[in-house]
Length: 56
Image (cartoon, rainbow, N blue to C red; front, side):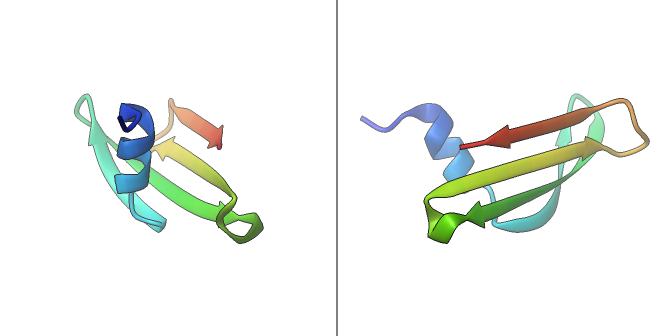
């Protein structure tokens, strides 16, 4: 069975993109590191007030 979090993460596009969460726009970037063995996701809420950084 596939982990729901990893399935959702894999569904995100690689590179820069925008998304909406709770009526706010977020600008995000998903980057492959170490020949695809590691991933980084960084997102900033447009207009400020939010920042997320995640490494897998």
